Amino acid sequence: MSSEGSALSTRLAIITARQVAGRDICLLTLQAEDGAPLPPATPGAHIDVHLPDGRSRQYSLLSSAPYTIAIKAVRDGRGASQWLHDTLSVGDTIRIGTPRNNFGLREGATDTVLLAGGIGVTALLCMYDALVAGGHTVCLHYWARSVEETFLHAQLSGRPGLHIHACGGRVTSMAAVIAEHGPQADLYCCGPTRMLAEFTALTQGRDPSTVHIERFEADSAAMPEASDEGFSVRLARSGTTIAVGKDQSILEALTDAGVDIEYSCEEGLCGACEVRLLEGDPLHRDSVRTPDEHDQRRTIMLCVSRARSGTLVLDL
Ligand code: FES
Image (cartoon, rainbow, N blue to C red; front, side):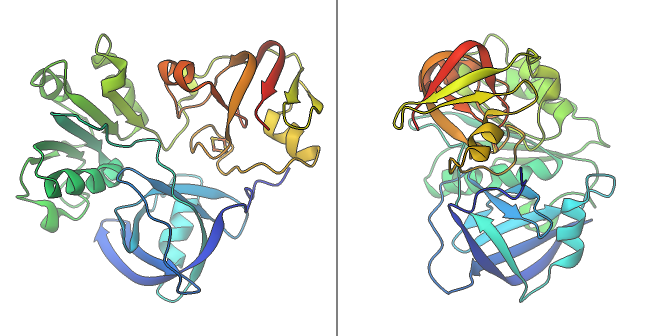
């Protein structure tokens, strides 16, 4: 199966500005290649950026009008961010997806605390700006390795409620920050895997609806083992039943059968392949939804999730 992602809702965008925003970090401003307005996005939304080699990566929108994303070149990573950072310049065209938001601000929250590590701050700045613009009290704690590696350091320093911690690579004092806020506070966290693990541990016992995480790497440690058995899925609208092999994802089985499904990351990160589950016993293995959210939404990510047993009936 191609890893290009379905083009159901992608479009070409042209880079209209590029700005250095820290060590190995650049800001790209995008507009639709055909000049049409880009779809609106709410604070916390991200877009897929599709690379020419078929891979895609997710980037938070720092602003939605115009679209602005930040790319950090991860030199020992899988090469995608480095390619984007080092190659793209003003006038180049890239394919992007429609914004998705798995990390939106909760309506009616009275105390919102944003906790960022490294480039994870880009997922939170748009939320910070929206809350400040709405006259809300907001607190953003941002842990960066050093002043040089602080994203937009000069522009961010001194802004109300924003605390920058140059921490040498260790996220210190998060426990104290969380403890300052009562159980009603909404906590949002985006950062490296180790920080998210610590955040998860520190927020055990809080109301799950007030604890929000955005991941840009799959949480493989928390991913349940899939059984090595195949199963089947039934598409409720067409009545078709499709077998899913033991080494195959549901997404692969459906696309191989000619079913047009939107997808992007294929790692359970982006939410593009989420569909409603009508019946069955799913084994959720994504990093997008919490167990509570899965219970409420009755959806499933087709790229990583499986059936515990029997047949899954999908709203397709
Ligand atoms: S394609 Fe990204 S979550 Fe499935």
